[in-house]
Length: 289
Image (cartoon, rainbow, N blue to C red; front, side, top):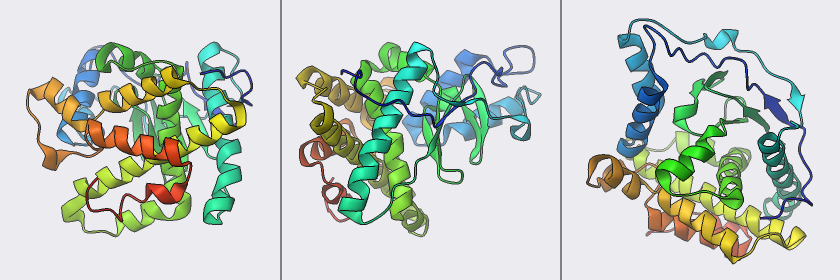
């Protein structure tokens, strides 16, 4: 993926180097334990924060900086290589969605803040930890990203490459688009007994929105090729619930899926890539995913 023509966003809250609040010493959890608990949470469909925070309490001491003490970093465009790459991808999501959301959904796009952090940081949705992976918090309309997740993608999940990393960011921005469209508010009112099934449809829609973004980025810049698409497809397959469960526990429990199977994630990413239309991403109106 070529990013030379992409405009870097200045909507980056860079909190890297603040210490993160993860205590690696006595009474706290080691980073290896936190990563393992995070992967177990992903595999079993449990919010990793529940496992990590519970284990932290059992370990005998907060070991983390309270959320209220976390502070914002400098907001602007980072000048390091990875920070600049993230800013360019974010800038392109701003430019694309500012164009197509009014055209396709008659909604004005409101730019979110992307928080770069290392270790842990505070959010309106609770404590963000690197082992939880990137996420979007609808309460403060911010995306939280520790770029060490990209190294984990390569080491633990078999995915990687610039376009694969861009897909991960675009997926979280996809949740922001869902928030602007009112999708997230609607899912909160749905039957909680089928929460996992609702979560799967929500996540697959975000995959599709990531594909829609990539379609329009490529129209604007002609900057992705077949190898880039394979990177994203391989990453989507690598983070499917079935593959993560098989790796962690040796068997698959479909009823516990929260993000969708590898095949489902590849399918909906591809639908977005091919169509470039958010109407094609309505995962709630189809019977089979």
